[in-house]
Length: 175
Image (cartoon, rainbow, N blue to C red; front, side, top):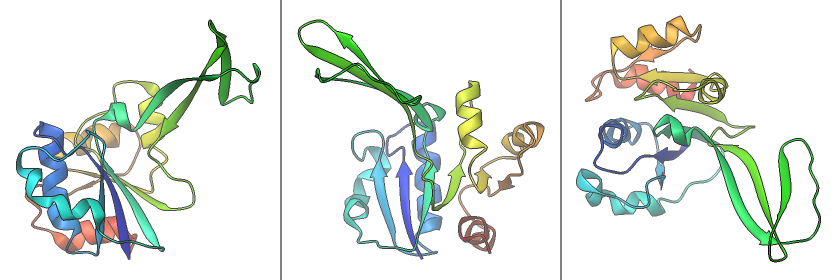
């Protein structure tokens, strides 16, 4: 099984948690890291090869980022074609013959097994709604485990550094 890993690859608290989980994920299978922070910083710097690890299907989508990357509103400006909307993406006319296109995006990937490695709690309802879509949520502490249980979502606690590789493997693969 291949793992596509969206991770905060920075020297931040979430980035450090993501790195510790990465070290556990590579014991499960090949892991392709997709940085959500624009590059590898701090202790992540030695893992450049993870950015080009070959993967194919079947794969598991694993996410360990701040909640602001679980879901967000993306806005881009494009040449004007028409002002249309389909309920999810809306094109809004702006000056100088361009339009602003915006829509809510998320790292959850329909059609794959999705695992959220939640180093943080969601701060708004959109983040919580996206998180609740994931087939598994793994947290690094008992305090976060209690928080997710209050949100009526089953979570598994895998403290870091990862010592219980069987628990992480089971959560990621759904075994």
